[in-house]
Length: 287
Image (cartoon, rainbow, N blue to C red; front, side):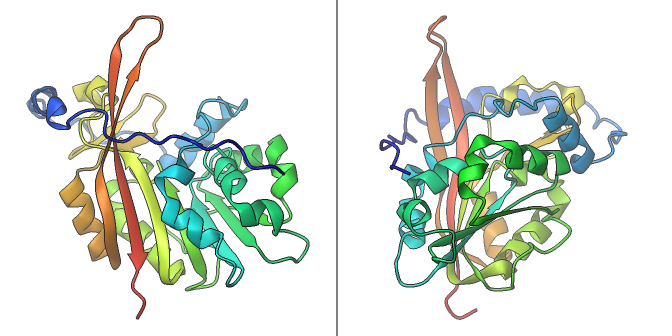
C-alpha cells in the first residue's frame, strides 16, 4: 500500500470572538424557554443503530484525512520502531477516521499483519450496525489482519483491551454523542486502557459551532447539549471546561484549544464558521 498524498491542516481561519455575540444571543434565547421534558428516546445506542441503518452507504461522514496532520505526535508514536504499537479508535462508525489514520501510518502500511508486529488497531462503537458497516467496507479487507472491531459502550464498560496496553487513542466526534453525565466514566475507562505515556487524540464540536446555532429551543437538553431529530445527542465543548474534565479523569493536558475553520460554499459563496475543540492528552508516566 502506497502512502496517500500529504494533507494540509487548518485551525486558525478566524477569531473565536467572532462567534461570541451570535452564540451568546442564541443561548440567551434557548435558556429563556423551560427545559423540555425528558425525551422518550431509547438512548444513544438505539439512536445510532437507527442512524447507521439509514446511512448504509457509509458516505455520510467524509474521510477525516486531516487527522494525521492534526496529531503528528501521535502518528510519530505509532510509527516508532521500538515496539509493536496498539491503537484504539472509539466511536469508529464506518471507518471515516480509522482508514485514513492507518493509511498515513508507515508501520501500519508496511509492517502490520501476519504476525509482523507493527500496529494493531482495536476499533469500537456503541452501535452494532456501525461495526457491521465497518466490516463491509472495501478498505477493511486490506487491514483486517491487524484490526479488531467490537461493539462496546465505552461510557458503561471498559474497552476490550488489556489494562494499560494502548499507546494511542483516537476519540473523534464521539464524546459529544454520549450522555453528558457519563463523560467522566468514558474518559476514565479510556485512561485505564492506556499505557503510561500514552496519548489520547481528541476532536469534537466546539462552543458556538455553526451546527449548534441551528438547533431549536425544543432540542435543548441542558447545558451545551442538544438532541437531533433522530434521537442522537450533540454536545459542544468549551476549552476551560474541557481541560478541567480531562484533568479530573487523570490526564495531563498537553494541548487544548479551538480549531477554527471557515468553509466557503462554492455555489453560494456563503462563509461557514466551524468551531471544533482539539486536545492532545497524555497518561502520566508514573501511573
